[in-house]
Amino acid sequence: MSELWHELWHELWLAFCLVLVIEGIIPFLYPHRWRSMVSQLAMVNDKTLRAFGLASMLIGTALLILSK
Image (tube, rainbow, N blue to C red):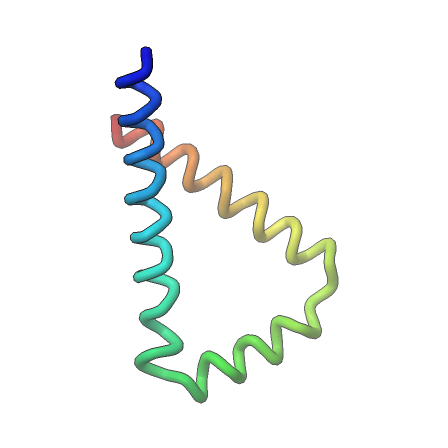
């Protein structure tokens, strides 16, 4: 069981590292556009942001399930 947990945490760590790499691409390549997008995002209400976050999590979960 310990080996299973070790493997799970290792996979989660790899996923987190990949998220950081992917999230860093846009600010690195297009800093002006990224800054503009973030300032526009600050004007979006909480309900819309939560809905977007929920949709993102559900789509990501569905894609993970489908990929197995």
